[in-house]
Each structure stands twice: as structure tokens, then as C-alpha cells.
Length: 150
Image 1 (cartoon, helix red, strand yellow):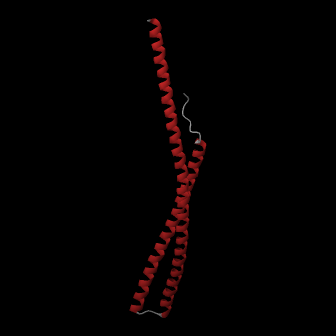
Image 2 (tube, one colour):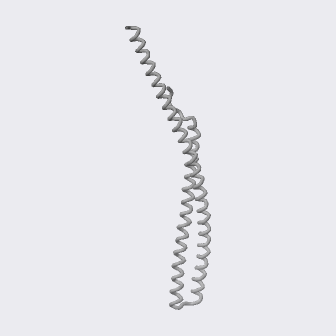
Image 3 (tube, helix red, strand yellow):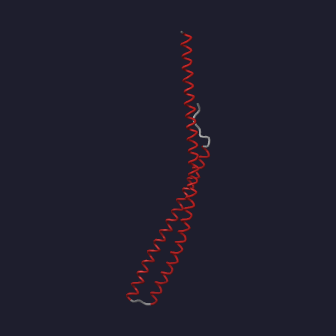
């Protein structure tokens, strides 16, 4: 009997390549999101540091010019933090959307894997049946030889 061949192997290979590409896109989007999170964290740390510096300056007594400079820096950081939070929300949405694409692509590959397993099981069944038929034929031939010799 001929060797097993999955009839949809080319389709499965194609779907696996698509899945790999989608996983790569997901990893890239996650890295982008992580970069935004890291930048946001640094901005928030800088904001906290400057806020503390401003409080210390007020308590120790400083010039209005120095306080306005710190206040302007805090305002600038506040705007940057807002912008990064917006970018983070957008990045999260892209990651979630891509996750859905990866899950769907994975389901397609899984369906083809299950179909291949069913075809392989049917092939095994046919091989076993052919082997049983061959053994039955050999037994019949041996019995016919024994009967004709006797």
C-alpha cells in the first residue's frame, strides 16, 4: 500500500506560515506596547521626582521664577503622560485585535491538524484491513495446498 499523504498538506503549510506571521506581528505589537509602558513609567517617575523637588523648594523658600520653571516642567510632563496613556490604550487595542487574529489562525491550523489525524487514522485502518486480507489469502492458499496434497 502506498505511503500516507495528507491531501490538504499544502493548505496546512500555508496556514502555518500565516500563523507564524501573525504571531510575529503580535510579538512586535507587544514589544511596542511594552516600550510605551516603559516610557510612561519613566515619565511618571520624573513627574514624581519633580513634584517632590517643587515641594522641597516651596518649603525651603525659593524664587517665583524657579517655581514657575518647575511648574512648567510638571505641566509638560503631565501632557506627555496623557499622550503616552493614549498611545498605550491604542497599543493595547492593537494587541487585543492581533490576539484575536492569532487565535483564529491557530484554530484554522488546529482544524487541519484534526482532519489530518482523521485521514491518518482512516489510512491505518485501511492498511490493517489490507494486511488482514493478505493474511487471509495466505491462510487460504496454505489450506488449499494442504487439501490438494492430502
